[in-house]
Length: 282
Image 1 (cartoon, helix red, strand yellow):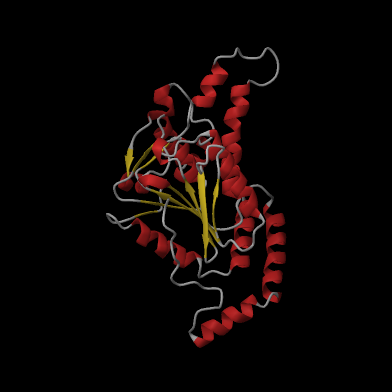
Image 2 (tube, one colour):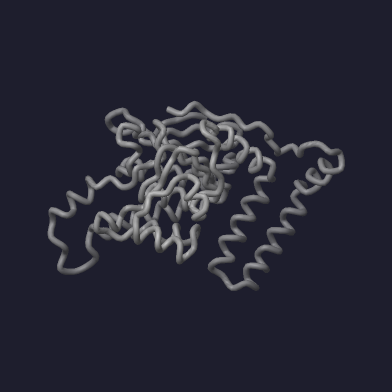
């Protein structure tokens, strides 16, 4: 399955391709270094809504076209809102507009399948937030990232909780306070990235990561993501009660029988895809 969510101009802000259960979502405004325009945010938001209930999707890969992951926020919409005075009552429209991106990050983080971000070129500001909302982040050896909001006079409002969840409070706070530009090696040390590629080896690294993901049974992975998400917000005993129910469902599903049979026969289980294919980037 391959599709592009089209703009009125005929351009595609998000290119979508599904191969062997892997959904590849590619930010597709390379002329603007995949900056987070309204169209890109809306398209990615809609794709997250679609994937949430699509059990044919086993993994979600987010990357950028044209050799750049994402250059951060596009200020066109904010500039229009800034020309209007703040309202005397109610929330500022700028705050509501800003919060839309945080809602997207929440949706991305809550997807029930394994999610991977592939950073090439650069991840700036909101691009770092997109990556941090994913389960796994891999980065090309020659790429860099930064969160320069404070150097522009802004707080990193919507990305901050996701950066802290990845890098920790002290380190994440310092990186956001200073806007420091990080190499791939520095991003790995900071905890914002999980693996870095050799020069020119980002696709090979992605295939290796996907092979690991696709060795897992899909329903068990969805249950795992649900249990982990609950662990952060619910009382432990309630999490364990729900996890026991998930465990029972898994045992009765027949998938465990296949997994044990495959282990005994020293073969791959029926759900495993050992050599995942990658689409051509637009």
